[in-house]
Image (cartoon, rainbow, N blue to C red; front, side):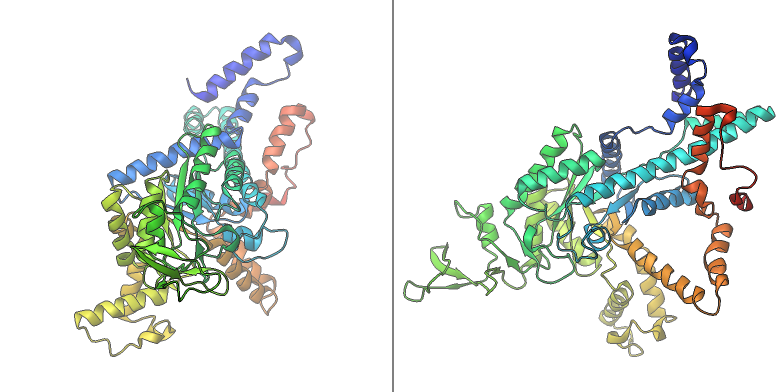
Length: 531
C-alpha cells in the first residue's frame, strides 16, 4: 500500500473513532495535506539530505563521473526556482544541491546593509537563510502535489481510469524538491563554542553539510582577496570537532563536514603554534614561518624566539602583529591542512585556489591521496575567476610549449572580443565546458559549486530590463525580454499567483468551508490568460 493510501485509511479510522462530530473531515484531504508537508522539522530535512549526500559520495568513490553540482542562493525563492527548473529540464533533482554562500549573506542579507565577506554579518542570518530555503522548497512540493491532486479529481470526474491511474502513480512516486544544502559557516564566527552553537542552529534549520575555513575569525577575508590569516591546525580541528558534536547531539549521525583551506593564498598567521616535540603538528605549522637566526646579542625587545633544530630563530613579525610565512610554501601548507583535516574528522576538503587549473588542483589532491586515498574535494567554480581569460591563457601556454604558432595572439589581451571567433577561443571554451567532468576525474572533485551565480544573474537581468523599459522600448522591453520568454519557455512563474500559493489556499478553503469557500481562482482571475 502506498503512503498516500495508507494516510487515507489512517485518517478515515481516526475520523470514525471521533464519531459524527468529525463527519465533515475528508480523510483524503488529510492525506493530501500530509503529503504536502512531508518534512515536519529542519532536523527531518538534515537527516534525510545527509543520507542523500552520503550515498552520492559513495557513488563518486565508485565512479568519478558521478560528481555533484550546486549553485549559490541568497533567497528562498532563488533556491526554489533552481530546483523547479532542474526538475523541468532533467526530470530529477539527483546530484543537484544548493549552496549557501557566506559572501552572499554578507552582501545581501545583513541588517547593516551590503557588507564585504569578512564575517561582519549577523550570525543568525545564516541559519535563517537555510530555514527560508527549505520553506520555499517545501512549498514547491506542496504546489506541484496540489496540481496533481486537482488533476486526479478531474480524471475521476471524467471517468478516465487510465489518467487517474497515471496521476496516482505520479503522486505515489513524487520526487521532492528538498535537496542537500552545503552551508558556509565562514571561520566559525568566534571560538569553538561559538562554532558549535552556530552549527547547531544551522543543523536545526536543515543543514546536513557545513563548510568551515581555517582563517582567523576576526581577521576573516573572502577566499579570493588578499590579507588572509590562517590559524594553527589544533585551533581549526577544535572547530571541526565542535561541528561534529553538534551533528551528533542533534541525531544527524552522518552529517557532512567540509574543511576548507585558504593557505594557498594566505601568507600570514596570527599565532605561533604550540609544539611539544619536533615533528608534531605544531612544529610542522611553525616550520613554514619566515624566520631569521638570532643570538642573545641580536635579540630585540619584544622578540618572539623559537628553537628550530637547535638554533634560535626569530619569526618575522609585521607591524600588524601578524607573522609571515615563507614565500612559496602555500601548496605545501594546503596539502598538510587537507591531510590533517581528513585524518581528524572532516569528510571532504575545499582548496581555495586563485585560478581554475586542473593541473594545479590535481597535483595537490594526488599528494593528499598518498595519505588519504579516498580524499574528495568540494570546489568553488568561482565568479572571482575570469574564466574566459584564464582558459585562453592556458591554451596559449600549452600551444606555445607544443611549438604551435601563437603569433596571431597577444597573451595579455586574450579577453578581447576580437579573439572570440578564433580557434584558440573555441578550444578554450570547450575546456571550460568539460572542466567539471575533467577535474572530477583527474583532480578528485566530488562537488562543484558556483558561489555567487544568482547575484550576477540578478544584476545582469535587471540591467537588461532597466535599459529596455526605461528606454525607447517601454513596456515592450518587459514583454519581449521577460513575459513572452516565460510563456514560450514554460516558466511556471508566469503564473505568479499560483507560484505564491494562491491555488493551495483555495484547496484549503474548500477543505475548511466546503461549498461556502470564497476562492480566488475563479473565471475572473487574470492568471487564466496564461492557461
